[in-house]
Length: 57
Image (cartoon, rainbow, N blue to C red; front, side, top):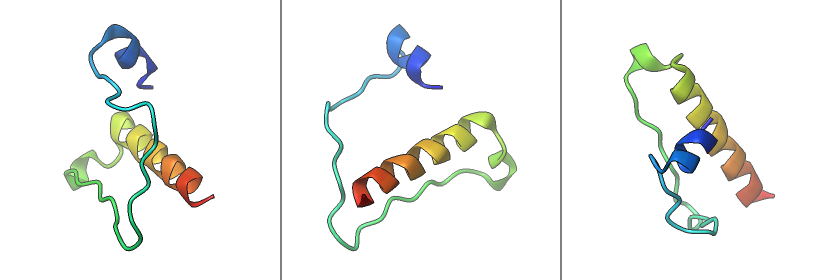
């Protein structure tokens, strides 16, 4: 979903590496409850969960 935004330059990847947080550190996604089903929010949550799973693998 973000591939087009990356290709068009609307967003940029700051680093070409994944950075795992130190033990005990967590990421939190905060958004209004009314937007929980917004496709962009759903996609971002899915991406973040997949990234976290790769870091834990």
